Image 1 (spheres, rainbow, N blue to C red):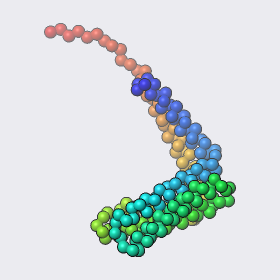
Image 2: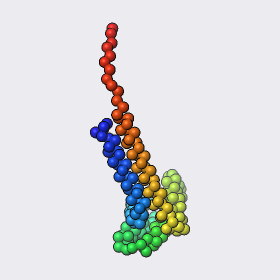
Image 3: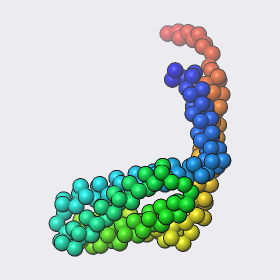
Image 4: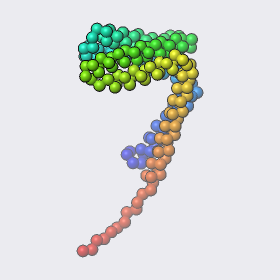
Amino acid sequence: MKGRGAWILQLLAALVIVALGVFILVRQDLFKQILIMALGVVAIVTGITSLATMNRYAFGKFNHGSTLVKGILGLIIGVLAVIMPLATGEAVWTVIIYLLAAQMLIAAIVLCIDAFAVKAAGFPPLPLVTEGLISLVIAVLLFLFPRDVANLLVTVFGIIIIVVGITLGLLAVFLRKRGTDTVEAVDVTIEK
């Protein structure tokens, strides 16, 4: 199905992606719940990663303790972000958003502290600094505009998903048209 039917699969995938984008725009409340739960899973994973890798480098007692706090807070807030939406209603969303913002702010501070320790140990600090700055920017935005940022991100994400789906659909149609333009076989005789 490499040639002829590939465009059909691509077109179906494009339709599913466009439907997902429309779902995101129409059911923003449900998508926000899913997004908060996904951010909770990310917080859990980063918390586990921090705890699992903190003994790999000798940073000193302060850095060890701050990384331990970051890891444990990531786990706790991640679990709350995953469980609370299942158990409670809309009123808890603001609390969860602020908890995630606080966790990201603490993570940003710890990552910057760890970056100095990593640099002193001779390792490149850029990945830690980058992650710390991204966490800081997201934390500040969530603290200042919790509902507005969530609504804007969901709307932008829904529009991007729809544009990606439409683009894939157009590529599928192009693939189909390109597949129908065939070259006819021609008999060629070569005389010596």
